[in-house]
Length: 623
Image (cartoon, rainbow, N blue to C red):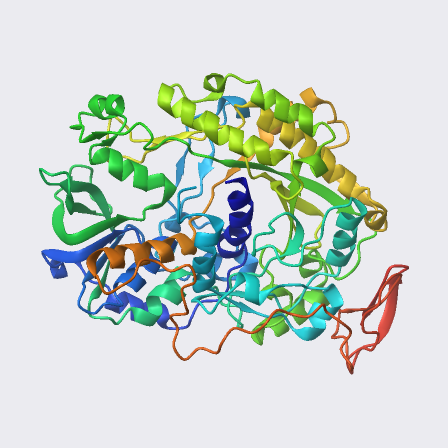
C-alpha cells in the first residue's frame, strides 16, 4: 500500500494539479446547444452518471461507446470557459460562479479558523486488481505525453519516460514552451541536499525531485475531461448531458437494488419538486469527495445515528460513509532573491519590455505565459526531511488512535484507521516514499504541502436540512504528528534556501521570518496560516471502473486486462523514452534565454537580434 501511495502521487500531480490553458473558440456555444433540458429527459436510461467532473465524463465516454446503451450525465454546474479554468497564467484563480462557495466548520488546531472549500461546480471539474500493477495500464490508457522542445530539454535537463509512464490516451501532458532560468539553480540546490533526482516521477518513482508536465495539449490549451473525454463524443445520440441540476437521492427497490434518482433544478428551494429518472443497469456516483457521501447519506446509506437524527430511513448502516477524509494541509514559504537571475516571474510585472515580449509570444501560443504553476516537483521522504524522523514515527506508533479521530468513529473504524496508520508509518522510514511536496518553478516563494497526514476528517449531511451543503470538518492538524512534520518541513525549506547553489540568489526570508524557529513558535505560526489542499479524482480509476461496469452486462467483454490498449484509433503510436538530454549539434538560444555562466554547459549562441550579455557570475542571457 505504501508503494502504491507513492506511485499514485505522481499521476495525481500530473493530471490534477499542474497547468491549464486557453479554451477552444466556439466550442462552448456548440456544447451548450447539445445539452438537454428537463422536458427532454427520458423516463429511463441504461446508465445514470451522477456528476460531470473528471471521473464522471470519463466513465460516460466509455459506457456510451456501446451504441446500444443510453447514458445520462447529471451535473450541478455549467459548461464554462472562463480564463481561471483555462489559461495557465490564471491556473490558481477560482471564480465564485464555478465554485460551491462553502466553508468548513471552525478548525480547533488552526485557531478556530474556517477553511474555504475549493470544490468546483462546473462540467469537467489495496484490494486485488487495484494495486499499482493493476492501475498502471489505466494511467497509460488515459494519458499521452508530448515531449518538450529538444533545445529546452537539453538546456534544463528535462527527463521523462514515455514507455514506462504514458500511453496514447485522451489526456495530454505537455511541457511549457518557456522555463524560468532560476529553475536551474533550484535543481542544483536539491542535489546539494542529497535529494535523489528521478528520471520520471509518474512511473512509480514519485519521490525525490523530478519533472512533471502540465495537463495541456501542444497549443497549451487545457487538456481535461470536458475537452478530451466529452467534447469529441458529445454528438453521440445515446449520450445526454443535463446541467444545472443535482441528484438528491438514489432510490432503491425492495431488494436494495438502486433503480432511480431524484433530480432537482439548481436554484430552486430545498424541498422543491423533483424529477425521477430510472436506470435499467447502473447508477454511478461520481460527485467527488464532497457530494458523493452526502448523496449516499440522503439515500439511507451511512452512519445510522446520523441518518436517524436527520429523519432518514436507514437502508444500510455504514459508518464509514463520510469518514476517513484526508486533507493535505499546506502553507506558503516566502523568500525574496536579492540577486535573482533574470528574467524571473516578477519580470512579467516589473519589466515592461519583457511583459510586452511575453504577450507577443503568447499570441503565437509560446513563451512564459505557457507556464502554469510550474513543472518541477520535490516529493521529499521523511528521512531526508528530518533528522528526528524515527522519533516522529515512534511518537505516532505510541498514540492512542481514538484520541485524535472524530468522535463519530466506531470501534471498527478506529481499528481500520490503526491498520491504515501502520501501513503509512512503515513507509515513513523509507527513502523511496515521499511525505511532503514542494513544487518549484524558479520563483522565490513555494507552497509546502503535507501529502500524508494522520489527521482524519468527516463530510456529513446537515441533519437540520439534508438538502443544504454538507458539513465539512477537515480536522486539519489535530494529530500533533502532522504539526511535527510540517515544522520540520519549514526547517528543511530553509536549509534548501541556504544551500551553496541558492546562495548565489541571496535569499532573504519574508515569511514566516527568522524569529519563528522553536517548535512552539512554528506551531503557533502554522495554526494561523495553514490552509487545505483537497485531493483530486484520478482518470485511471474511471477508466478501470468503466471496463468493470461494461463487463458486468456484456459477456463478450472480458474482465479488465492488465495491459489495456489504446482506444484512440488514428492517433500516432506512443514515442519512446527520451535519451539523456545532450547539446544539440547546432543551436541558437532565443531572446531572454541563458547563454553562459559559472557551471553552464548549454548553447552559447544567441538567435539573430540578440547578444549574450553577462548578468552576474552565474548567469548570462541573450538580450
